Length: 248
Ligand code: NDP
Image 1 (cartoon, rainbow, N blue to C red):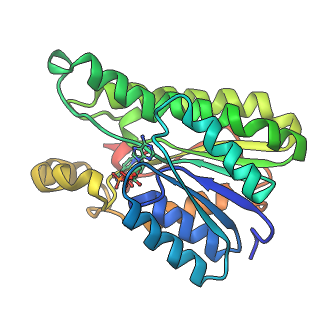
Image 2 (image 1 turned 90 degrees about the horizontal axis):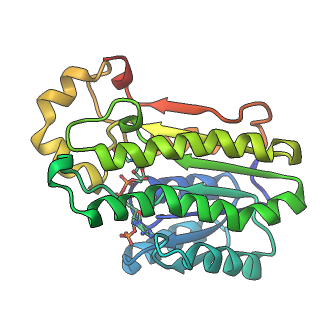
Image 3 (image 1 turned 90 degrees about the vertical axis):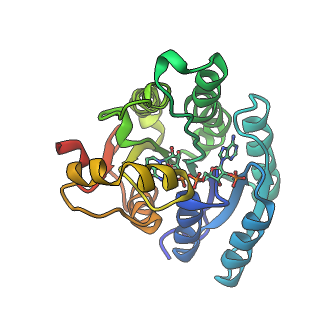
């Protein structure tokens, strides 16, 4: 129960990795503010699962890529819970396509969701954390930032930017007890990777040292450590959880 008395905001928490992170933090005693975009039925299921753990949970529906939404969500969290100790910037999208075929919208949507939204959410949440002199921020990056596949230029640029932003925030916020890290997953069993896993299986498996995909709970374990009070000395780090993909 190392998160007892704490509140975490998890963006994109209705499915996949975000859902696993929210449940894992709740299992460790954290109350949860869960943002999602449109999957209300799924988000309600997550809320039910968290409530059964005896934790307080509130849903904050909103497209985090809309520049107005991060501040609205964080204000809602502070109004409901009175504090915010942990921020997990998890919401993310892909629009994989060779650069020559990408539309401006493909580029802008991917950058808005994976890079600008985390920046604006940190900007909104940091003042409360600064006042508390405590905070843990974990940004969900991707192995694509360091080992992009074909067609991932927009996504790789966004996640690479997110990793650089993580380090910049670690520098700015360290003196007030706010630790900022990133987790870079490889290929995880979620809706996002349905197509990659079904069409690129041989190519991916040949690059995966551990020859298997991971479940969202594996990412949640790492996030739970970096987001916890037990983490007192890791900041500005990018933790690769990728079955050895980056070694290939
Ligand atoms: P999924 O597509 O399975 O789930 C995405 C989640 O993010 C959903 O809850 C979705 O909400 C939410 N979301 C997407 N866009 C927005 C938005 N604009 N505003 C609010 N919520 C949004 O993705 P994963 O769980 O696989 O991915 C989670 C994170 O992990 C992403 O940042 C992704 O880039 C990263 N990642 C994933 C990998 C993988 O192998 N799966 C590998 C490397 C990184 P809704 O349900 O309402 O649509």
